Image (cartoon, one colour):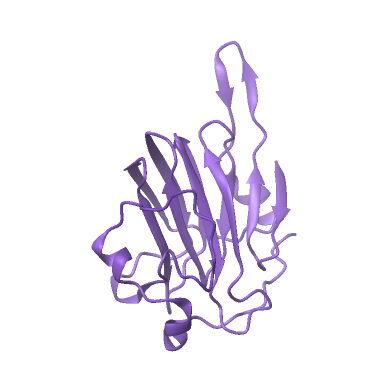
Length: 190
């Protein structure tokens, strides 16, 4: 697999090796030792699945204080996936990165704990999988408004389908007391 570190400390793009033959394709979507060696810490304690229609935007979500690292991928369709550094004191605070995740490119994104995450569906529908390093904690869930002008995320959609919760989130500037603090990324490789 190819692992590309991003300018957001701890965030990584993973392009798994895909083996093709006349029967189809095979790839490892997770291998604990290989992923730890590549800088993706575990353990992962919860797996989640969502399916969404075209135009759905989910995010920008994070948990505080029970922050979750997330390893995300798409198994059907395509999404535009975004990670935002919302960790106070981070050298990349307020920076974002977006990429297409699709069943076709089989790309994965690792979102480190303390970063916000969101995606919008660009195909007719999309099946989205993600592994989490901590359990979902409703009392700790937080979010940033998807179209915060200070972030300037270049979403490929103008009028997304949003949940009531996602519509009510505040801007990053309004979230100061609800943001996680930056912890320098440790070297997880062996």
